[in-house]
Length: 464
Image (cartoon, rainbow, N blue to C red; front, side):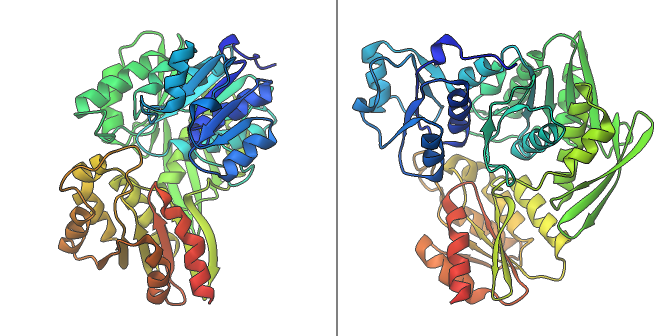
């Protein structure tokens, strides 16, 4: 039986309750019986789903939305100090709890798996959630995206396992005490919070140091940053390190990845035995994510062959190479990729899945700080497409940085020989892309902002 509700979480108020991370915690608390309330900037399917579970969700932020008897106010790092509900919490002396602390409290007393890394966290967490559910283990989970199958980003299960996506962007993953931690990769990102790779390594070392005694670190044997992190933490006492990947030295060694259209067949060597299973999403990086999930499950004592079979039931996460539809012979696919490594991986995956198709990309850069540091690499990644449309930067939580625009990416893409068009009016994109696309083409909407909204609109224009 899973634990109940921490006292501070009996009547929580979430500021930004519709966010991927915040809504997941709110859903779990609601299912555990908490009286959940919160606010968000706009109406959404997530808000409706929370209301259906019994939560009170206000649209817009106002001091009056915060009930006087709230036991805490939950915030993410994106909530600014002048938010009226946060200011009101101070006036009422209501405790303010960071999202990561709220999530950590929900994992207490359970066997936690925390999935970390610069890329691939949502997919790997989702793979584990689906596989453990398929095996009847009834896990709890909190994910940064909605599963394509169950259609939710979080659930409260009655089993003893809790699978959580562990976010390094603001160092919040340092709050967790997992039995098993996965580190998929370690790269420089989130430039507003990390000034160097040394800071990144220090942060990941702290995360690894929170693994419970006799716990397990599952970590890539292929990616350079993960290999360096392994070197740094190898001497930690009472820590078992399990490496996975294509490297000959990997403990869970990937012998072969065969891409078969939009699926992959993976063969691994585990404890001297060969194991082959199917991953129902395209791309080498997704296949490696599945191997990481396999290794983590085995570390908890789950039989490898059972877990491998269950991983085949995973059908994807929304926004991770998600097919939005087809019209006029053109398939429209949505990608959350916003870092050059992710962009390259998804573009290569689509090339491998449909090598004869023309690949058209609609890319929306995410964050001014990321564009400032990685704009050149983003442009170079777009050279893998046959043609691209680049939108203005999606600011999210950031204020503009003088001189930093999408032009940095466009110039780099053109220098790499890419066919790139700048479109500043997002509303003009669907018609422009529909005019470019021909039967047999693939259109990929790409980015972590609201570019995802354009997929259905492109399909409408293609159909007209």
